[in-house]
Image 1 (cartoon, helix red, strand yellow):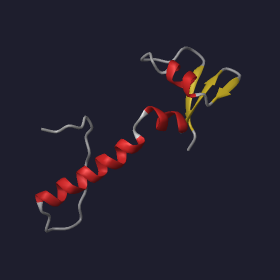
Image 2 (image 1 turned 90 degrees about the vertical axis):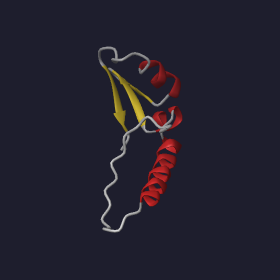
Image 3 (image 1 turned 180 degrees about the vertical axis):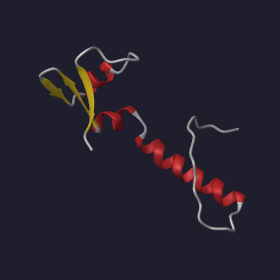
Image 4 (image 1 turned 60 degrees about the horizontal axis):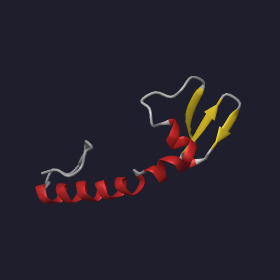
Length: 80
C-alpha cells in the first residue's frame, strides 16, 4: 500500500524500463520531497504581507495559514 499522499508523474525516456527501477526512482523522489515538504521549509520560502508590513516570522506565517483562506489584505509571497 502506498504510504505517501501525493501524486507523482514520472516521465521516462528509456524504452527498456523495469518496474523495480521505477519504484526506486519514485521512492527517491518521495524522500527528496519529504525533506523540504514540512512547516520549516514552507516558512523559509514564504513571506507574509499584511498591508504595510512584510514578515518572515514562522509563527505569524503558520498562524495565518491555519484557516482555509487568508484574512483580507494578507498575502503569502514566495521568495523565489
